[in-house]
Image (cartoon, rainbow, N blue to C red; front, top):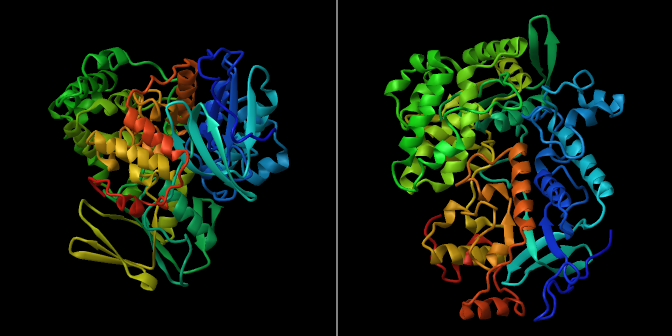
Length: 580
C-alpha cells in the first residue's frame, strides 16, 4: 500500500470546479474494526471514485477490541449467530466451513461450523473479520484507491470548513494528513472501577458489576483460571482447584434469559410501523405515551395470552417495566435461569418462537428510531422504564453461557446480589471494596465493572482539539456535555456546521445516550451503510459566513494546543461545564 503524502491538497485551486477529473473525494477512516469494515465495504460498492485512507493504531485489521485474540479469551461467546451477522465478502458459516479442521477443533466449533444458529467464540468472529478485510482489500478495483496505514495512532483531529486535519504518531515520529471527510470508527472504550479478573489471594471473593453477557464473560474467564467445566451424566459441571467465590451485582438481581428461536429474516409488523410512528412523534412531552399505546396494541395482537397475564390493558409507559420483570423478580434467579433455558431449548427444537418476546424484539427497532426525537422528560421516562425491557429482551445469551452459570452456582462459587436503586462503592485499596446495600454490607477482594459499554460524554472524546470544538459547540447551544453526541441521521457530528459536518462519528459510546440500540454488529453494518450513502451524496458543507469562527479555525492550523487533552485540562480554559 502506498504511503500518504501528508500535505497533499484536498481541493482544487480557488475558482476551479471540483470535477471527477480534478478531484477524487479523500475519505479518512479512524479504526479498522467491524464498523470500519462495513463502512469500507459500502464505500467500495459505490460508483463514485474515492481515495480512502484507513488509520489503524495496531498491526491487525478487522477484529477490533471486542473480537481480538489479544484481548479476548476463547471462552467468551458472541451473542450473534451466523444467520444474523451481515456478510462482508461471504457469510460467517461459509467462511467457517472452509477453515482447516484442526483450527475449527481448536476453536471448539468443529461440529457447528455450518450451523447458522450456532454461537461462536468472539475470537472466531475476529478471525472472520480479519480475513474479510484482507479479501475486501484484495478484491476491490477501480475506481477506488485504498491506503492502509498500520501502526498509525491518531492523536488529534481538527475540522475546517474545507477539510479535516488528522495528526498521527508512528514509531518513527508524528505526521499530519488532510482529508475531505472523516469517519471515526474507534469502537468501545473501557470505563469504571475495574481490576484484573484474577484472584488476589487463594480464598478471595470477587464482585462482578453487572449480570449480562459481559458479566458472564468475566465470571467464566475467572472460573477457567481456577478450575474447569466438565460434561457429566447430569449435564455441565464445574470443578475448581482454588477456593474462591464470585457475586454478580445487578440492579434487580436478575440473570439474562437464554436465546430463543425466531424466524429470520425478521417478519414485518402490521401495526407498529415506521409510517405509524412518524405520525405520533412531535418532539414534545407525551410522544412516549402515544407510542406506547401503539406498542401495546401490537403486543396484544401478537400474543393476547401474554397481554392478559400481565394485565396489559392497565399498563402504561412507566408501569410496563414492572409487569415485564414481575415473574422473574418473584423467583430465585438461578431457578428461573434453569426453567427459562429449558423453555428456550424447546423453542429451538420446535422452531417455534415465543410471540411476546419476538414482538418486543421487533419493536425495539421502532423505538430506536424515535428515541433521538423524544423530549428530555420523555427520554428520562424511557430510560427508567421501557429501555430496560428492550435491553433485557435483546440481550438473550447463548445457551452455553447459561449452562456455565448454573454449573458455577451448583458448585457453590457463584451467587447473584440485588443492588437496588441506592448503593455505594468504597475503594479500600489493597483491602478490596466495600459495597453498601441499604443496611447490609458486602466486602469483596476485587471488583470488576462488567456492565458493558456505558454512554460517554463529550468531555471524554478521544481527540483533544475536536473535543474542544464539540464542547464549545454544545455549550453555545445550551447542551449538556454528558449527553454525548446528537449526531444527525447520517452520523455527521453537527450536520449544519460547515466544519463539524465533515466528520461522521460511528464511535458507539458517544452515540448511546440518544441511540440506545445501536450496539451490535447488525447496527454496525447499518451505520456503515448509512454513512457511505451520506458520503456518496457528495453534499459539500455550506459556505461558512461566520468570519470570526473562520479566523479562529484558521489559527489552529498554525498553532500547537497548550492543553494535554484530558477532561481536567479542558476545564482550565474556562469553558463552563454543565455536568460531570
